[in-house]
Image (cartoon, rainbow, N blue to C red; front, side, top):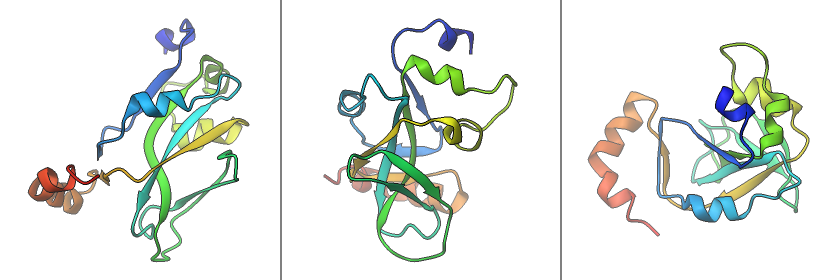
Length: 142
């Protein structure tokens, strides 16, 4: 955290259980200086087990919709974030916290970067097994 407190440049935060081919340079290019940051909106064919992102036509994040069990395609939290230095004002003064639950609700200027690049959450055994078996083919999708 001390590193972030002194930083003048954007900071990239990645969930460790995501496998993707997202171009981070492209994502960084969408960061607006006046915003708190951007979040990856990863397209999935079935959002039932992920929940979705609600945002407006300017890509400003309005809300996180929890898992609704509805089987439909959509954009969900892809676990990749790029924050401007101002985001430190929103981080709680405690050792352990959730960016999604403890930080995002206090951010007023968070935007969504939509991507349809291959993306999979490998944080559960079934998807990790699938990714091990299909990674070469899956990651070559355009």
